[in-house]
Image (cartoon, rainbow, N blue to C red; front, side):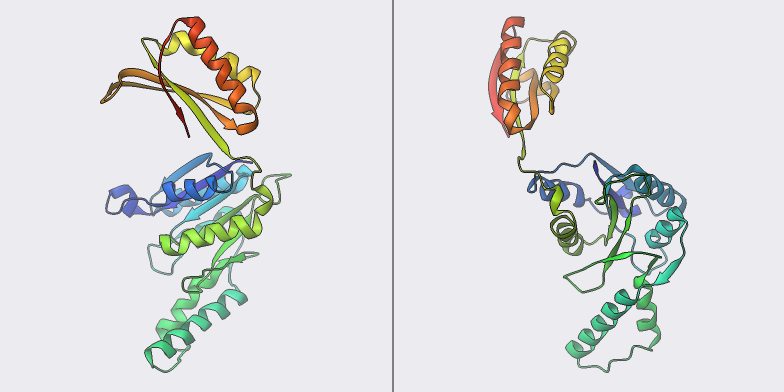
Length: 274
C-alpha cells in the first residue's frame, strides 16, 4: 500500500506561502520506517479538489490531505470529499461537542459569556460538518477535529483511508502522527529504509543502465537510483549511483553495484550512507 500526500491551497501555488508539509511528512514517515509514494498540490478549485480526492479514495492508498477544512468561503475540502464519495454532508455529533467545548474554553480564557447560539459560534459548527460516515481525527492544539474516510477501492487494506487535517502545521503534523501511531501502527516497518551510494566520474548513465537493471532484478525490495550532476561545486560533472531499500538486503546489493562499476572501469569517488 502506497502513502500519498495532498496539499491544498492557492497560497502554495502562488508562492504567497512556502509549503512546509512535504519535508515534515517525509520525516514523520521515515521515523516509522515508512516512505511517501506520491504528492499532489492543488489550488482552491472545487472541481479539481473533487477529482483529486476521487482518485485518492479509489487508489487503495493511505493518504493525508492538508488544508481547506475550515468554514470560510475558500475552504472546499469537506464539501469536495463528500462529492467525491457521493455521500451527503452532516453535522458530526462528536465534532459538534468538541467545538462547543472549544467555545467554552475560549469564553473562560477571555472572561466572556459562553454563547453557543451567537451567530459566529453557530457558524463555527460548520467545521464539524463532514461527509456521512466520517471518523474524527483529534486535534491536540485547539480540539477542533479533522476527519477521515475509508478507501473505495475493492478489497482495500483496512488502513487505506484519506485523513483530512488543517493546513496549519502546528495542528496538521500532530494529527498525522496520531493517525500513524494510533490507527496505522501495524504499518510501521520493523526495518527502516537506508541508502548507500557512490560518486562515479567519467561514465554515462546509458552505459550503466544494464548494471542498474541487473541489481534491481537480483535483489528484491532494492531500488537503484542515479542522480547526475554537471556543475557540482565539489565534484564537478559526476553521477551519484546508489541503492535504497531494507537494511537486510542493502549491503549485498551495494557490494554487487561496486563490483559491477569496477568491472565497467568506472572511476569511483566518495561513498555516501544515509
